Image 1 (tube, rainbow, N blue to C red):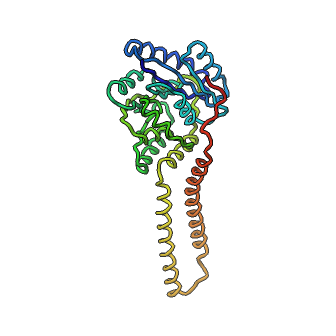
Image 2: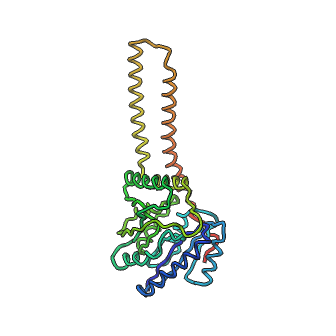
Image 3: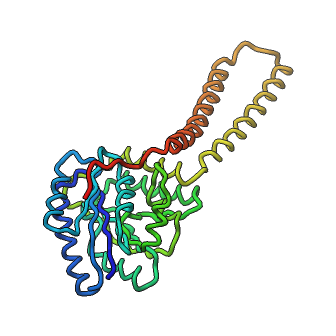
Length: 312
């Protein structure tokens, strides 16, 4: 028998979880026919929810012993929830899926076939449409993937979801990356392995509201850039050379102008503009370097990625 561990990160998903589990029952019935040698276990990770998410999961646990859960002491974020699920998953195959049914459970059969029969280490999903999503959010998402593929050494697939299945070998590789500042999509790409991509059209969440605001996604994007590229530091170096060259040219220009036309008293507005320009450039460069130093500082603290309040 093969064990399939299903990791489900949850934050205020009390309304979605019962619907999700009902949908997964249909998937399990399909597996019972197509893959009778596969058993399921569920690992719900409560990311410090403020509603009755934990209580709903506990009721599932009472009715189905295949359900396990981890409840955090506070909200540590989805990345920490996924990592906690990996630490608890004991399966030969590991699945990551959201509870809001934006990740279609019916694709799991095709995904399992890819890793069990076709020789892939992972089967991942990507959205080919963003129907129903705000246009400005979709625009910046596409820009983000284009930027990441230009500045990073690894490939980021546009529209990639966290929804994927992987072999035990790949799951163990993901677990070895124990950094605190996590960007799971980047970690999946960094560890490598053969991945089959399965496309689907965007699906609206079944219940509740999205936990990702526009500015939250922007912060998440900066985490990805800092975690998987040093291009901003290269930008600082290049900008330093450019500004230094401009300053040198300006000095030569001022000297020549003074020798030819004397030293007029006018020109203080342009001088103020130059001072402000250089001050802004210095602050920008300092901020970029400081962001990397800040991430390094947090990593050296070696704090746990999450703290468990209860689990079963």
